[in-house]
Length: 468
Image (tube, rainbow, N blue to C red; front, side, top):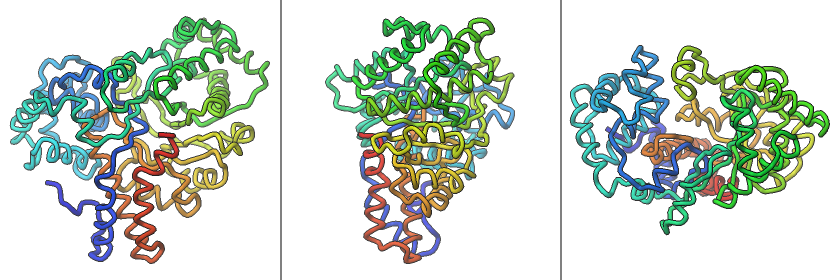
């Protein structure tokens, strides 16, 4: 099912170079600085319940494709915990496995099926029950407990993404358990910095209760955020993450920032959340600059993931809420949007700000020139809709000529699907090997340089950028 030369160039000479490069990096440890796995899996170290809960429910790439073909989320039991009839859901998935032909999901899933479960006949309606029973039986073994899989995958460090209101009890439990696996939190303040976030006003109050600060005032609110950042750092966090609708930033005076804060809180109190008003966008923009200031002070690396039009399917959002596979990429401005923040902090080498995009048109036009100039900026890898072999190749082609390799940060798996982590890293390593092999074949790099770059792209750059 898996060809040993998958993703390598068809040209025999170039393919041989790619093989040599890949051989140098394929067994390096996995460094996962950004993702959405659950710390509770490793704190409790309990068996995963069934194939659907493990492989289908957490994977937006899977259920959004099935939904696009008219399969309802009810049929897939996406919101059911536990799943009432996992075998039925699995059969639906298997019956429609052909939908994933040519997608990165197919590459990841086939890797999981063959390398983790020994399944070498393609998933289909015919093989659905065999797959289900094999996976279900394997999940009952001690070798498939979360901690055992973490070690089997050779994961050096795994970062989760966490609300600022999270008490991080699972992270504490992991650290107190004596287990040596390194699971670190990431500070994602969206619930208390985005007025459109459900429960925003209550979240602000909860932030005050957690920290003992008066979050009804601008200064108290900022102190509360700083306090939570320090708490996250105490449990190993090295980074923050910000999922704003745009990359817009502002650098208001303290008086104007405070006035905007009061206006936003008042607006939310009176009309409820989910209002995309001008004041809300000003608030988010100012908060990115405030977060950059705090990162310069406390050393946390700052990530910005802008440009997703969240919950595009209004009916689906009304029925199921967030994170149902209905987020869509939108055009995103960086050159003008980031200028207020960069005017203040852009020349600070002590600040690391990693930029991601869902707007590929910005890679060569905006992001590479920005990162190729400002000391604080680095470019995150292709994200979400573009973390495919083709997306990774386009990224390298568009940014390298201006930003080089060393203003990028390696690979992020950015997944909720734990078993797919080694598969995703393998695809990235093969794609990097293929890309570098072409540069060697074109006499743009010597092979020893490509070997060094392959290792840097796999582990070196990510360790450095994320301070891991």
